[in-house]
Image (cartoon, rainbow, N blue to C red; front, side):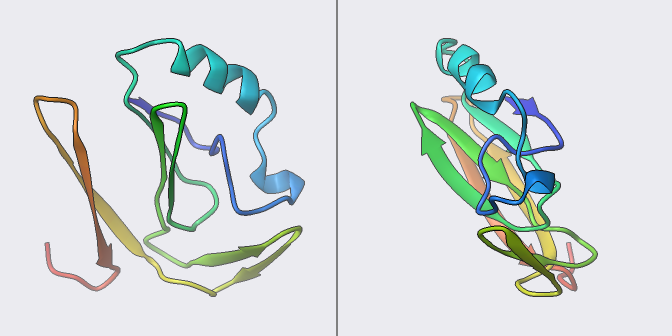
Length: 104
């Protein structure tokens, strides 16, 4: 698992929410069979997808959310909170979303 700040994929096309060299890094990571997931933040929006067998998991902000619509982004649109990750010995990763006011 790799944790980085800027996501390799995003719902946004705004330059602030894109990562230079993302395709090249993703190509290197997908060639490594032991890489199961890439965790990221920065967009303040939960997003999960799988690219060539690698899960890309972006977490929401615990402070305020941002909604992304192409090149436009709106503060406070969406949900703020956290995600809990359960890592299993077989490589599975379960993601559980919790609202920002949930008791842990």
